[in-house]
Structure formats: C-alpha cells, structure tokens
Image 1 (cartoon, one colour):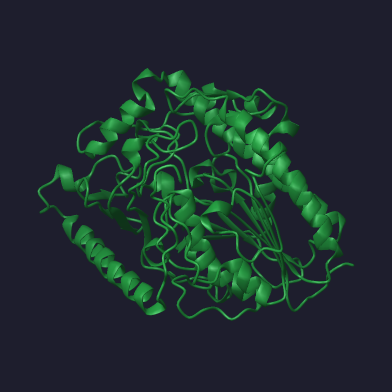
Image 2 (cartoon, one colour):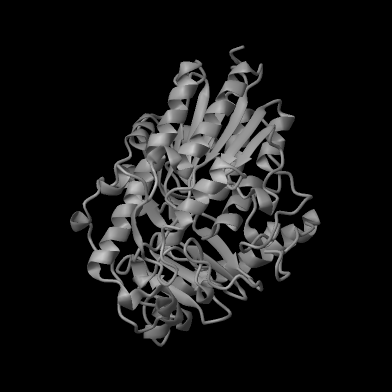
Length: 480
C-alpha cells in the first residue's frame, strides 16, 4: 500500500562517513564526481557553513540523535555509549507514527540503535561483515596513507551491500501504511582509502592539488608523535595525491549508491512527499597538516561538513538556495522533528532551521558554532587501518568555538589553540604560540574563550537538570 500521509511527510536522511566540506562538488570541488548530490543541491538548500558537534563518529552521531552536545549526552569519544534516559530521534519519530528504518554505519553497538522498526548494521555477520574485513585488509598497517583500488568488485563493496539491504527496507516501507523515516549511513569515504573499480580511476591524482602542511612552528606536541605514527615522512607527494584521489573516488562510490536508493523510492512513488537530508558525520585530514584519517581534535577539515536539505516538490521551500550563515549538525534534531510535526523537546541545544529558512535566513542563526571531543581513557591505542593514531586521542575534553574569522580550542592537555581564519584558513599558525597575546587579534580570541567557558557551564547545568545517566563508558580492557 502506498503511503500518502501528507500531514506527515517522509524523511530520508542520507549520510556519508567522514566527508569533509572541501570534498563536496556542490561546495565547489569539481574534482569530486557526485551527480546525485549535485542534483539534490540544485533542487534544495545548501548550507555552505555547516559544522559538526564533534570531530569523530560516535559523539557526532549521538549529538544529531539527541539534539545535545557531547558534554551533555556524555558520549565524548568512541568508547562511550549513549545514555539510556535521553530519547533518540528515531524513538520520537515512532511516537509520531512513523515507520523507522536504518542501515549501515550508525553505531549500533554504542546504543544508537533505539527506535528503529528495522535496522541492519554494516558489521552484521555475513556478506556485510565479510566486505568490511576485505576492505580493511587492503591497507598497510604501518602507515596511514596507503590507498588504491580495492581487491574486490563494486558489488562486493560495503556501500553496495548496505544499499542492497536498504533496498529491501524500501520494499517494507512501500508496504507500510505509514510515513517513514529512513536513515542511510554509508561507510564511504571512511578510511582506509581503498575503493573498487571503476571508482578508483575516476580522479587523476596528477590533477589533485597538495594540501598545505605548514611549518613545525607552533604545532601542539601531540602532532609530532602523530606524524611519526602516520608514517608521514615516508609519504611522497605522489602518495598523498593518490590518497586524495581515492578519497574522492570513495565519495563517487557513495553517491552512486545513494542514487540507487532514491531511484528505488521513486519506482514506488515514495519521493513525492519526502524530505531529503544529505550530510556527513565529520571530516578527514587527507594530508592536511601532514595527517590522515582523524584525531580527537577540533580543526576545520574535521568539523566543516556538507549539508543539503531538499523539500518535496509540493512544499513551498527555496530551490537552489545557498545559505552562508553558520549552522551545526545539532540543528538537525529539531529540524527533522519539525518536518514531522512532532513536539520538539525544550532542552534541545539545536535550532529548527525551517522557520529561519522560510523567513529568508537573512540574519545569522548562531553567532558561533561549538564542538567537543576527547576525555578518552581507554585501551585502543592506534587503530589503523581505519582509525585514530594513539597520539591523536586526548585524556581531557577539548572544547572549541569558531566564527567566520577566528577559531579557539581549549586543550587542557597540550595548551590552547587559536587561529585567524581570514589569513590562515587551514589553521597552521597558532596565534597563542606565535604572539605574546597583545596583538590586534587578542580581543577576538578572548571573546571566543569566554564563549567556550560559558558554554561549558551551560552544558553541565543542562546535563544535571536532565539527570542524564551516562552510558557504559566501555573503558574495560578487552570490552572495547
């Protein structure tokens, strides 16, 4: 039976894994072949300056699904589980009468699996877990920058197999007499940087510009150890270009599979009343600062993510609109609930984007955006080929704020950082290491420092008010 609940539109939330904004074609990188995302961008609204609440998977996704920042829900690193007593997005959709389904990399084992009528993790035993194992086995374990063509066919890759599973969910959705919330979490372009043919040859490495690394002056001490663990000194310019080309090919692979899902929904007549969200959980270094993959850090390349919101054809909403103002992925929680006509919990730290957009989005929604990560005390060490270098983990919580002009990071372990984004958009020259604090930028940096301090207090007060019971932190050796 075709669902036609016009009062409750469908929501399709498509997520790539670890795609930074500078690797999005609809944000200006024409080396990245992604025609489906480009189409959705042309038909919807593009948020040119969307930032994630955290720079690594689990905290970022927990923030989207709870509508709060890591210091509130207390999922600040990979080993923490989401709290049991905070409702999650899918649960609230269910309460509104939605059929909910999810597939791929959605942190099932971090307690982000609640509220789904149907779910299938990308580590599910069988073809999916076998494909993940085959993918990981492609990479070298002594360096972070190995890349190339995967040793298996396109149809054997994780993105394709996750999509196959989603297509079966589409059949269930088509049979349900209910609106749907479908969340698709494809594994690409998460490292290791290997992708099946023909996507491995789509981008010529010789056309890829090298990312700036900068000098060693003013670098936090942990980065020197990361450079060693990454094997950066052994990477040639050709190696780095090949990494980026493979990363772009992985995005193209994801894009092709997202189109398969859209086409399947269209065949069932389910696109007419469906909102589409396309985004990513966080970014990737891919050679910036000489690093690869990610760390528990708060830099532009890890926090700035692509974001598209496309309304159904029958809804009065902007088409092809480019929104320059700052937004945060925490804003998705109230926005998606607003689309569904659900009551938005008063404690959410995000803002519903729809009223703002409908009023023209002329004035800023946020005066700055925040992010939090770290407080790690586990036993994972370095987790190549797909994870974080040991030196990239932080025992204390990092908290940051950024505007268009400046960024500030409070780092109790290695010293605070601040950057003038107008002259140093790649954040290579730490103002707090290169000046005596009396230059013309100090006022701006001090203002962001005060904002971070105030936001810290706001988060702690909210957490205590809500009585958040932290999930299992997982810091028991052998249980991570």
